[in-house]
Structure formats: structure tokens, C-alpha cells
Image 1 (cartoon, helix red, strand yellow):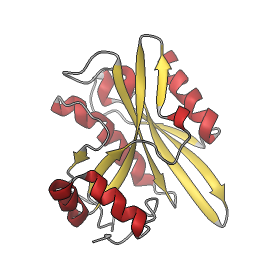
Image 2 (cartoon, rainbow, N blue to C red):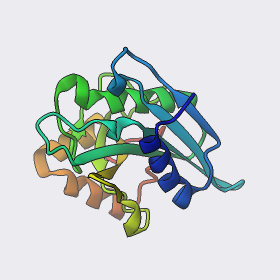
Image 3 (cartoon, rainbow, N blue to C red):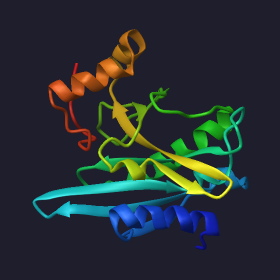
Length: 191
């Protein structure tokens, strides 16, 4: 498994904030480069309060359809426990904009038809800015283009409806008031 120079630069960015990846996996859904992302796994936190981060590598190799060539993105998700299927789910999310000719941006919602992980009530995702990371984490400058880091926040059908009716900020406000552990991918719906 070989990373391109661009992917190595993205990995170096992750290493700066999360340390060395505990594992890197490649998923190839077709022969197209944008259909073969890598997903890196990082183990953070302490034994009594573990935190895992799963992040894509390679999604930003290509621009989104209809977007300026210098606007690209990578995705990441937090989890309070290691779950193997998160890697494939995240890899599929990385291919989603290219298969559907879409641009992804903060506060976009991707409606899901299945649980984010087995047994979870969370089936859609809300993309957000990386508010739990330092400001310098949000953008990676890579020569001719920049890469926007987008946090994947799995949400329930009821939470997705709230976003549709009142906007994503209403849901994020609810998460802050309750508070909701967004790394718990098997959590109950906040609504």
C-alpha cells in the first residue's frame, strides 16, 4: 500500500494533531482513483476515556464537480470505541460526492438508508467544521489548492428532520444544551 505525495502530506497533517495512525486501510470500490480512498485510524485518549478518530486520505485528490479546482475536502469521525465498520462507512462517504456529482461543505446533510454502525439509530450524517480541534487543523494548504477538513456527525432521523426544518445550527445548539456525546455512535437520538 503506497500513499501518493499528496496523501502523505495529508497524513502528516493528521500526525501533527493526532499522532501516528494505528492502522491505515485502502478501500477500492472501482478502478477510478476517487473510488479508492484510504482510511486512517488513530487511537487517542486514555484507557479510562478512549477516543478513536477515523479519517480519509485521498478524497482531496480530486476536486468536487462544479466547485473551483482549489476547493477539496477530507472527512473524519470520532468514536468512543473502535468499530471496524466505521472505516468502510467513511470510505463510502468519501466516494459519495464523486458518484453523485456534488460538492460537500459544512452543514451539508447526507441522508442514509442504513445505520452508521450496526445497531445504531444514527443513519444520516451532518458535516461540520472541526470545532473540537485547534483552528489550524481546519484547512490544509497543499500548493495549488487547500483541503477543508469536515467532521462527520452521525445523526438520527428525528435529528435530521430538525435540521431540515430549523437548520443545522438548531441541532448543534441542542447537542450543546443536552449535552450529547457525539463520539458515542450507538447513542440514543437527542429528540
